[in-house]
Image (tube, rainbow, N blue to C red; front, side, top):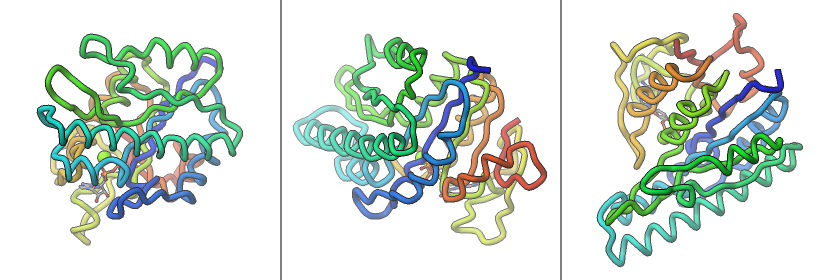
Amino acid sequence: MQDTITLVKMGGSVITRKNSYRNFSRRHTDDIAAQIAAIKGYMIIVHGGGSFGHTKSREYSIPGVIDDSKRNGSSLIHYDMLDLSLKVAKSLLNHGLAPYIFSTSSLFVSGKPDYTTPLYYMKKGYTPLLFGDTYVDENRISIYSGDSIMLDLARLLHPSRSIFFSDVDGIFTDDPKRNPDARLIPRIHDNHGIRATGGDATGGMKLKLSTLLAMKKHSGEVYLINGKFPERIRYIGKQEFIGTVIE
Ligand SMILES: Nc1ncnc2c1ncn2[C@@H]1O[C@H](COP(=O)(O)OP(=O)(O)O)[C@@H](O)[C@H]1O
Ligand SMILES: [Mg+2]
């Protein structure tokens, strides 16, 4: 069992308050840390940006072609993301994990991320902690989102389980924040009949859903769970489970 790999995504929507710049949700982060600390085997954690990433990406119109303003903007976003990562790492440390932070922008070689070093640390028993990041790609500043990192890791590692914590109970028939009639979908295998709004700098639920469906080709169980109630991971596979299973 030591060889099982679990990928965890901590959504920016749950570890930060999305509409107020650099507003960290310590309690939700701690609650998630407490739950995932019990997971056995290898684990890699990826976190999103929320108000540490999206606010300034919008302000500086990133992604886009590099100019003086975008260079300063991406430098600031990268700083804010590292700062958020430190806060997340501290919470994981406090719950007995051994996180090791890697900036995904530093992993890029010839336009592609090279995960050799984070995986080396994983094999030594650390929990690599990665985050959605800005990076330079030829003459552009691009964004490597937490969800894309998850998909690339799944392709590379074929994890036994991938868990996405977000700020909703799962995938609904429509955006539950805008449509009170939206229904939670406990099991999903394609995107038919789902209305998902794009949203922030990294595509919101629309892109997330296609990422989740693509992940399923490379990963064992894939879940979307409300990170405000992370204890729900304990009910995975049981009748009481609340969340969406991607099949
Ligand atoms: N069909 C849908 N089901 C669930 N959430 C949806 C849907 N359509 C849009 N959303 C929105 O997507 C948001 C989650 O996406 P996002 O903010 O990118 O989360 P994260 O920070 O976890 O990546 C939810 O807060 C919800 O308002
Ligand atoms: Mg997102």
